[in-house]
Structures are given as structure tokens and as C-alpha cells.
Length: 130
Image: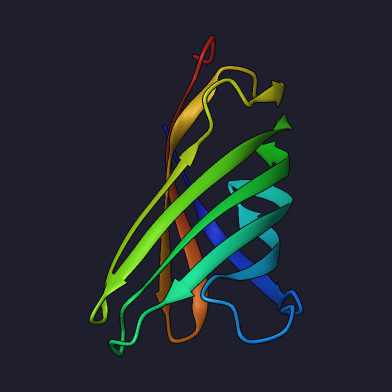
């Protein structure tokens, strides 16, 4: 199955203790629209390198709302790198994290950013869904 739509995201850096850390921590707040109508909150760890355009991040994001009318929640796990400006990102549903009508959810979400606007393409399966 496939779900698509847009989302807004607010990323809030956490204050560093002392000198600038090699790894920065941030909070994530999102509002999804389209086939996924949901809010999410998460935590991100990110690091940049001394080479321009190279960085990495990991994040966990709790999503609560509805997916094509089915209400519940699930957790997304992010892992991303940028190598000299070339991005690679994997965002997947944490196994067995689906709740409510989203119990049995599995899949991967692709994030697109164009002209400052965010959208998603979510390929998923849902145990027991026709």
C-alpha cells in the first residue's frame, strides 16, 4: 500500500553544555497531512564533519493520528548521511510499534524536499488489512 502527502517540521536544538559538542541533539515536531493525518514528536542526534556537505543523523519519532482513516500510532526510526552533498536516508517503521488500528504496520517512508516544502511517500503493509 502507498500513502502520500505533505508535512511541516519544526526542529529545536537543545542547548549544548560548554563547548560546541561533536554531536548535537534536537527535538522534532511534525504535522503530517494527506493520507497520513498525524502529529509526531521525536529526538534527533546529528553530527557534521570538517568536509563541507558531509554529515549524519539518527532519530526516533513517535507518530500519532490516522493512516487512510485507521487511527493509532507507530514509531519511525531514521538514519541518514550526506556525503559531500549527496544524501542517503532510511526511515522505517519500528517493528511491532503500531498501536490501535495500526497494529501490524510495517514499511518505509521516503522524505522529499523541494523548494523548501516537505512531502512523503510511505510504502507500507498492514497485517489484516484488505
